[in-house]
Length: 290
Image (cartoon, rainbow, N blue to C red; front, top):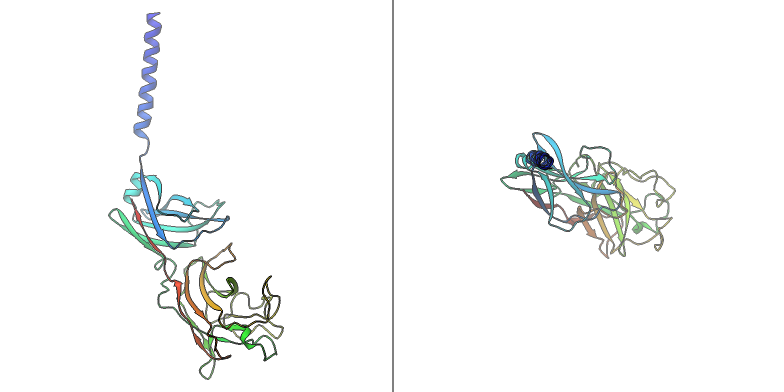
């Protein structure tokens, strides 16, 4: 009996020692806390994912969909301590690719225990964006509804030129024009080059039947109005917006970044250039601490 008890105690000691040894070899973790301003929820198909750059390689710090901050994540302590940069991307909610998507929204280098992150050096610096537009409906032959279309061009000279001065966006982002009808935003189309027609020039259901219009972003709101709206319409006193959208994009609403906006003056003249002003959100920012 004594011999059996000793053997049992020895076995327990070996087991305990083995467990202690495993604990000693287990990787240690540390908290990464992010505190961001201006982010909006992405919807059910996409999530935000944080990354730290360690020796030039991205290491995920976890995904999230809530935009209530601050939020903390448990990260390998050694990797976190040696990380040089923090990056935030937008990823599919069901994602088979372990690498970051092209759509990166915030980034910043660590200085000691913290990093100041912003969208300027990862999406684009939108602070110098300017815009002009006119009211016109070039896609039909009716001259009585010219206030029902908006085109981002400048026709104040001998020939029309582009009306939007916007920086080139990083991969994973596109511009989109909008008109807000009593709280309902309706897209004028997405584009990456303000000196060319937008992506829906040939497929728009709102334009008239006389052609695609000038070779610049814009839209005529002449037919097939969404539920609750009536086309043709009058865009005076409506809000015109240029936003920056993730691509792909699963939301029918404008994204957070809106570098340009303007309320069409009540006395606006058709075919006459109108200047846009700075939009409500030109940059996103925040801090990340380790």
